[in-house]
Image (tube, rainbow, N blue to C red; front, side):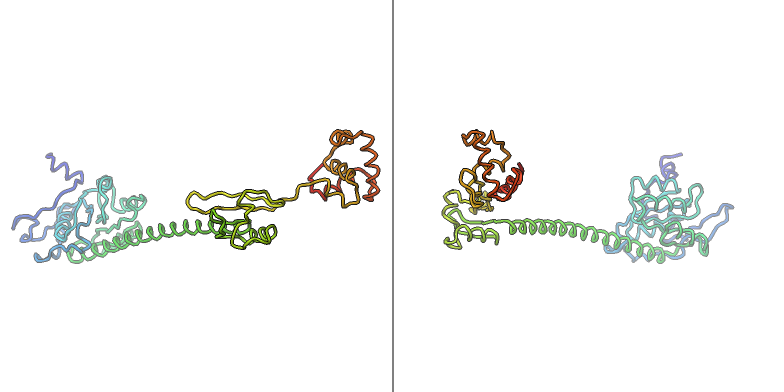
Length: 369
């Protein structure tokens, strides 16, 4: 067997070339016929031909379309390939179902013309396998079947085919059906690309929305805090409501559009904590203000009617110190401390050391003994 014959038996790709006038398959020769298994001639495989004046159009769906022809009858392949090539398509040929599946490993066709009845792996089985593979599931399959064979047509649609062409072939009908499904395939691809672009844009919008939500939440948190943005010289550019209240409370005489001089000079302010930082990407200074609880002192307990010494002793009782420890801290004898404790309890209207400690803790803000 020659190399050319071997390639054809394996379903290799073949180029369809014009044939000399008068030769079989040429435009001046009679239509080829198909022989059945008994050797009798069937109806001609081509009933009509393309006009010689009909040239492939660049904007036609057939122009440069990759079409895989699968048929075990060479005459059918030759007839279909002849007018598809004339219409501008690129043709790939396989002469069996197995060869077609093997050919798809290296060729991604835009459309497949597939004979229903072939020896070995039939067209219906080939179509089912194609539809089961993601790479070929969307490739339109047009079945080749005999005229009036309704069972094959229905079975082809069930297997996943989108249309059929009947033998004997009519060129104009074949081109019309193939062009229609190529156009549908093209529209499906454009729709898929458009959907992918819309999804990409939606993803971008979703990220932007999430970014804006995060920014708004950060701004809301900033508004809930005492935040001031000012120039290095103290001119206020932004001031949250909470910060404005703190500044008004601690610096009632300051100009409303300027930071207090005490904070600019780094001075401590009773009852107020202030931290600031210069933003590296601008000349703005970010200030964060916070209410500072007053420092607990024994003097805070004197309004209970205690002497300064009794207030000192109660102060350390609230901090969990024993009489001996208080004596060491205040340089008093333990018995003296005990005497002061005995005297301060009636002033508080209390009977126990623990009750006195709890009362002092409420005033001092001490969180535990």
